[in-house]
Image 1 (cartoon, rainbow, N blue to C red):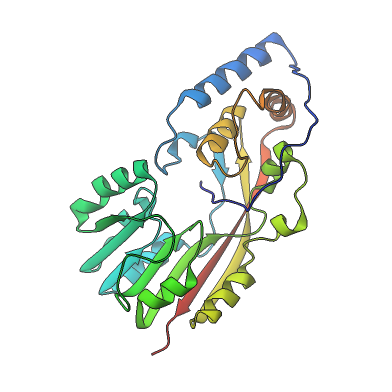
Image 2 (image 1 turned 120 degrees about the horizontal axis):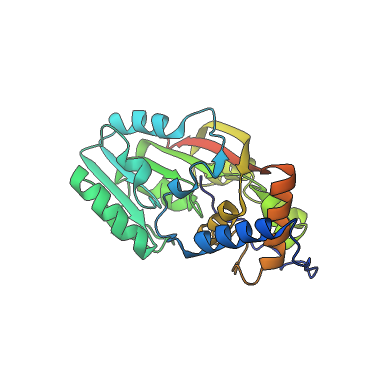
Amino acid sequence: MSEQPPPSPTPPAPHTPPLSFASPASRDRFEALVAEADAVSVDGWDFSWLDGRATEQRPSWGYARAMADRLAGARAALDIQTGGGEVLAAAPVLPPLTVATESWPPNIARATARLHPLGAVVVADADEPPLPFGDTAFDLVVSRHPVTTWWEEIARVLAPGGTYFSQQVGPASVFELVEYFLGPQPPEVRRARDPEDARAAAEAAGLDVVGLRAERLRTEFFDIGAVVYFLRKVIWMVPGFTVEQYRPQLAALHRRIEEDGPFIAHTARFLIEARKPL
């Protein structure tokens, strides 16, 4: 389960619901769940803490498997914004030259520990152009859920005939949760990260888009602790989120989950594959 930032959500709605619980037992469950989720570490990009507490439907195309197939046939590969290196490390075969970039210090340390034993090099990079590599350095560039895609830089570091293969977050992803806390978002925020915009940007950079697929996928939060953990970890969904600031909204959502069942949201994903002409 993972997310990347929607652009500039609007500030929280001014309405603050009062704290209200169905019973003292419900209140005690709320306090325990929130305290647990507020204390656990959110370093790295591993969402296993949510196992049994939240679910996210996976895209039908199987990104990790498809990426691994492409890695097996590559000579030199770059994984941009690798996180903790979790997806790259799962590939059965890595190219003779495999490099990953990451900007967040805790993830750099995790990716280094995970990928170095596999022969991959981790480069600390600010996720801003230029990429710290020479022209035509790689025949494969991959990225899962990049914050920003610098298409001109990808085109530059790809060798002629090389491929960019990426799963990305689409428009209005998990916005049921975003809008629960922040209120309705304007149309320009809801449509940001549209797959067709990615196609246009890739083509403007001189790449040929050979594949583009998009899906909306069901996500469920089974308890309020899962919501707290998710918003602490994915900090751009509700900017500045803290338990204390949003305690009344959290309490109301806790009661809603207890009475009506899991909170349902929908993630947006798209898969794009682009090639550099020979």
